[in-house]
Image (cartoon, rainbow, N blue to C red; front, side, top):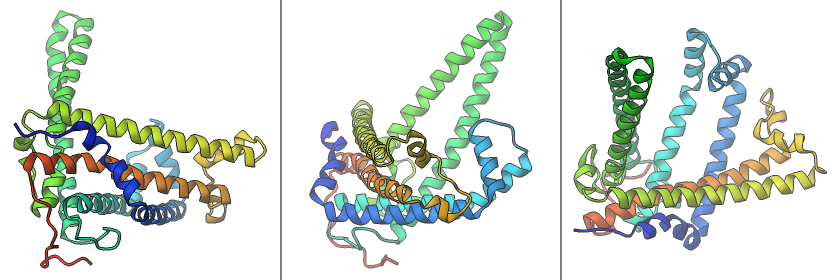
Amino acid sequence: MTAFSATDAAFEGFRITRERPKIVLVWAVFAFLVSVCSAVYLVSIGQEARAVLEASAGEQAASPQAFLKAMGDLAPMMIMGLAVQCVMAAAVYRILLRPEDKGFAYLKLSMDEARLALLTFVYVILACLTLAVVVLAAGLIAFAASAAGGGAAILVGAATEMFFLGLLFYAAVRLSLAPAITFAERRLALFDSWRLTHGQFWRLTGAYLLAICGIVAVALLATTIFVALTAIALGGDLQATGAIFAPDQTSLTSYFSPVMIIYLLVAAWISALYYAVIIAPAAIAYRELSKAPVVTTPDAKEPAA
């Protein structure tokens, strides 16, 4: 059976950042500009929309009309977020699967990114529908178990939800190579990953967990160092230091303080590293499991925008 090294796949993203620091620097600048645009947009939508979003995040009640209006205000930013994710994912895939298709630091806007965006949209719809079915099924099973008492209904309902969530996690891992297949084969590959990942669940899970643990450790270390240095620079004012995680969004001047700008630069570097580390394992797994040859000639029919 064709296999791949889970550890090699997990740390491939770190290898990319070590061997291609200039490219990662360009990605960090790109991430910084995206953060600035997002901040400008958040400040511009107004206090009312931000209050609704904060209430929703805190599980507080908000009227359906106000929530829908706030979501409408945020729609452009969510679309931009999806586009950024697809652009960054495609950049990592290019390094590993089409190294000669360089673009600008492997960043492009082409049909590759469009297909990844469409795949993401379809998967989000399927995930929402599947979750609805799971919740409904768990509720029906718990209702049937209520004949044995309230305690039995709660226990059976919880066990059923855990079982279904486990199945969903299994399916997510088995389908996790879909973006890499879609990029490499230049077609929308919704379920091709299922066949390719047969017998590879635990190896893929290990690779993803190692990658997540690695990037979390780096992010925590970088954030801790930044916070410590900021606290020292501000004379030990912990309240002022903590304000960088809850910036004043009433105006652009108050938001873009010198400390906040430095924080956005640090976060941009972490974001660039994050994409490399999180996206790379699936690309390596696909390359090894499919034994796909590395494509060195860009598709002339799909020029970058």
